[in-house]
Length: 453
Image (cartoon, rainbow, N blue to C red; front, side):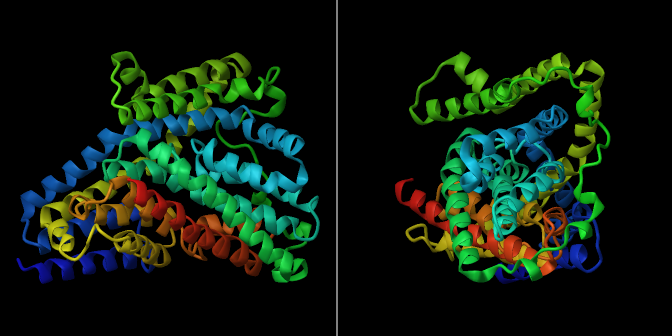
């Protein structure tokens, strides 16, 4: 089949996936598999080869990141029931004060708390952020809403073990330790600079509390955490553990993964370090440690309940990441990488901007950061070898682009709107504009990394 026909069928596939998700409200998992089937058949792979690539692509991704996602979600479920987030926010407020709390809370969420399932993290931290915002003056809610939106979305795609970061690393075959280190290099300045830019805009009159905030009594009832499966009431906890104790297993796991990445870059080999720093073993140790802490302070039945809740949360995440591998495998088999590789040059920064643009367009169309990041990574995986760029830069660029324009089709948009007591107009400013600013700002450190890699 001609190169032109393959490119046309790829475009039709992506457009069809978007239409199925947005117009017909089809589940993204089903839409991505259907798109993979069409692409394989339309590019001449044949029935057996198409099915073979789809199943192999799913299996390859699950083999690389499946356990990591499951372990991360389970750690987050126990931390949630230990009331770790509420206590951490209270501690940050005492240490950094009201002036710096938007930055402190955002950086903590974007880096340390990414093992916690997004909706759970948002439902717990949203009311806390709103309460703090009321104490920061007339623009306090705007500052906290923006900080929370930027932190949550950036953390998903830049920080291990965020589900978007794991998907991007897995689909583009980036060592997880390497992604962790370079993701931190990107996410910390991105979150800080984006919040500072938005704070300047709010200070210059871009926020009107009368029009951009709802009265307290109008806030949706779901804005207040209700407790749910696996949730332990505060009264059921024994003497709460110190925060360093609560987070030590997760932080220890991340340190082990980073140690492995540093050892690899220094070309230092040690079998014990290699074993302990492998992401699966490191996160498993983190999960075991978190379970022991949970059993000590909540009791074994509560830990089992939290783990059951975490397993339910992880199901769709695992499926969505896996079908991203289906699309990537079919694209590779169709020869898209060789075709598009002819049109890119690794000697300029243009490929990274095109990667960012592709992910941004997908996100505007689909409205989901995770789906657009996974889909764009699937499209780009076959191209990566021909670009001559380090795959981690391609993954980070796709992640940055997938942040652009979080809008009305996003569930996160509406959760942030209701939980922070904003009108739709206010949420468009703090969420849509705020996260878009972060999407553009992230290009700075990514392009800077391109100069040194």
